[in-house]
Image 1 (cartoon, rainbow, N blue to C red):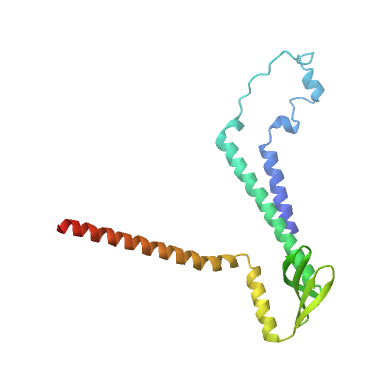
Image 2 (cartoon, rainbow, N blue to C red):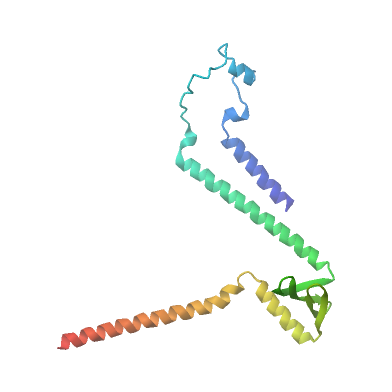
Length: 195
């Protein structure tokens, strides 16, 4: 993981150095400094002089958009890698713990019901000003069923499976309505032609 992050950082640095203008990197024609550049003609440029318009290849909009897309992808990729790294780290920390939190439901202001797994048993806790044991579940079948339900709810796309059937039903109903309207329209049209 560290090698991947170092590789990405190296790629970013190389792309920055390749796309940066030479003046920004401090390249000069001589062995001078900024003071030498300012006093090249013997005196510093006056406030009244207007700078000349500089034409640059960097003003090409396609090149700018390409750089924008590239840097956006790099930033989003780094954020994604950071989130994965932190979630793996959190996941490892949870597995070393004796207690495994399964889930919870808020009931009001600073009050909730939490489910915690300890060993092969599940404990339902009431959390408020104090913590109270509501129920201990030690039946293996019930523990497995609750764990499967919690695992299904924790997957990122489980909400899509529940809504997907509803969406499919809505689309089917809409298609049936359109089909019935179309057949009704053609039936009415045929009746007018018969008269």
